[in-house]
Length: 234
Image 1 (tube, one colour):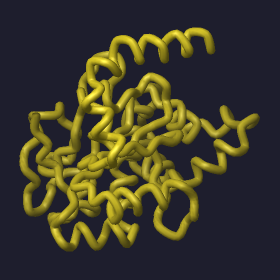
Image 2 (cartoon, one colour):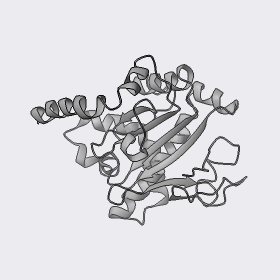
Image 3 (cartoon, one colour):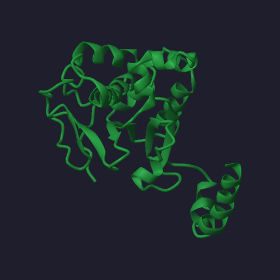
Image 4 (cartoon, helix red, strand yellow):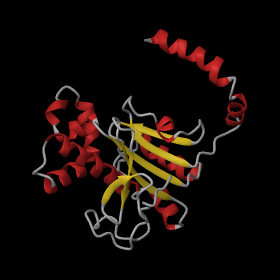
């Protein structure tokens, strides 16, 4: 496998770097990404490939389950990365992108799967609110349907957690930052964005502007105060 990686590096140098050398020379002088893209560590997820963006366009934060610990819950790399992106780089948008068939969410729903992975189980405590929402509201669901709902609810909970971070709260209050909740379907390539008006995830590009007061589920979280931006269009 390492040999494959080495071969890939050589191919990159020959076929990609030379053709885009001007881009990389410019990037060597500094970065100015407009978007913080928070997604899962899953090997099937490639943020630049999904969004068809170039190096330097996205500031990427990845971890198991695309989790955003609430401010004060930990002093780990997630907190520092968010603060640097918002305050240091002054990104204009933050996307939290979950994905189908998420192993972290399977572990959240089935803690027994994590018996031999105590570190993973401990990390998923940051998704405890998601687990409780699923147990309280979706007890009748099973299997893939339950997993899909957990993936969506988890993305929305991370949007909520983002707003506890002081750097994010300040930029939201100033109208200089927008938050976006996405879910990527691996099998279809479709990306869904949360539509506050309907309280559902809709195919990206079909999402309507947020109503002043969402009428469906999650209205208690997104009360029309302007903090959650859902008008994603392509």
